[in-house]
Image 1 (tube, helix red, strand yellow):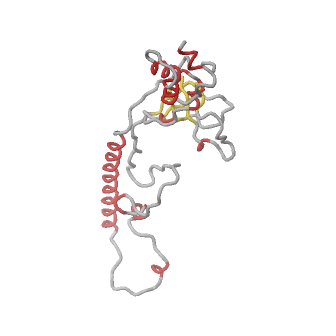
Image 2 (spheres, one colour; image 1 turned 90 degrees about the horizontal axis):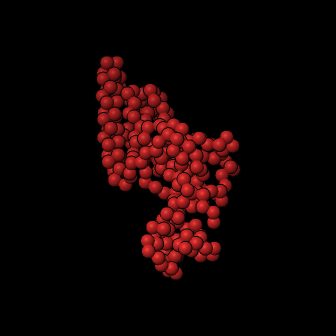
Length: 231
């Protein structure tokens, strides 16, 4: 009887657990009503594809600190962040790599100076080594601080290979003009085929879905095996 009420046309839509329970409890009551609503929403395929995009899964995982300059290159696709001129040790990237500020037009002018700007090769090597060590230590301290702070609001979650999951489709995964905001926000169920560390998984997507198959854990959701409930 309770399932029939939840499925009744015109009573509720696919609003998630809290809203569905609120609408039902205003009109009906039966024992363990919220439990039934929770079970229904988690099994409803439409709800699984449209609701619940935000989750706090995945612990903070900083990038490893390079051992030297030009050994590791990273590409960061996070946009919209404020620009900063100086970060670690209040040094610009140019200073960290070359141990000096970039030369400007005025520096190229033939202006007499009584100050010796030269530096012996051995002194420069020592300064470079010290600078890189200081930057590495500062990076390590900052990573520990970020990890401690971020972990306060996140929880560890792990999937296994062959698990069936739903995946959240972010707009950034699509090329220009290919994303449709009316399409389902999550798709699946699809199988996990490979695990990368603790926060990334390769998903076995159909061949017609031409996007990167590797997803961060924050964009992966459990799939209920009984999810195909017809409404």
